[in-house]
Length: 328
Image (cartoon, rainbow, N blue to C red; front, side, top):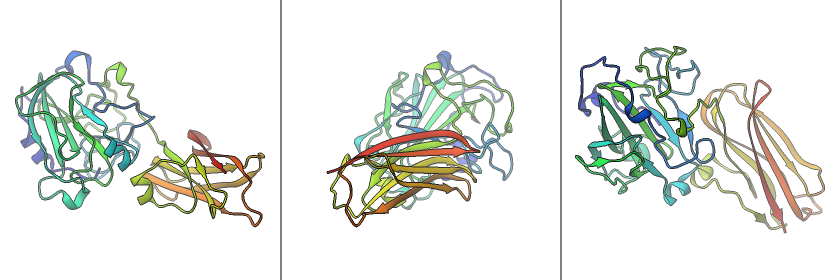
């Protein structure tokens, strides 16, 4: 997610519930995951809170999984097809709805408009000075109204593409007495990185820091583009033997300079069709790599082809995905 709003604008939209500086514990044992999904399987944190004061950008581990001025945690889903199918955004704890906005189109930055970086959103008061803000909800999906009490896990909307964002995700900002807090440390946004702290998540949220990995992989009959994958990251189960090329692609998040994406296609008889390594030239929040081979003169051998995509960092495996396609 790109920069949402100025800090002054964000603070102005939240009712302060108690004096600044109060260290009230999170309600009812901590906060839950804000999406109905399984972290690391069908949703991923793309950006963490930027806790570095000044122009530098660092997440709470002192890593680069953020950008300058980012005041929340971004939970991404696979593609626009998944967004259209519907992924629920839910209340991270019980409380009362303070504000809501709907009606902003799901067209990303071009439809945001002045003062609408958050797009369609909801703010919930959890008591004790705690509030949560949910941004980029799908147009027409906001399911709550100001003054309405909500239970933990109640649906507030669906993941969308509204406001200043370039991919479907939900942005969560957590505040204590009006100050942005990192839910992974419980510390204020300007505390700096590498400081001791305690996560505010409930144990069942299964939230942990993710240094990067793969969120999708697949086969295609020709070269692919980031735009194609962002629309639909599905992979075919079968392709005709006349397919002009057999291409394997991998979509990674949290890419760092020097990372390697290793792509291997194995033919039905066990031989390698391709064995390709791509070294990343710079840090990127998301990156797509593909490699493949043209149809042989004698045609493709019928049968099951296996593709393996590995995300390596310093020679260590971060994540691997295996996909198959049948040529028949």
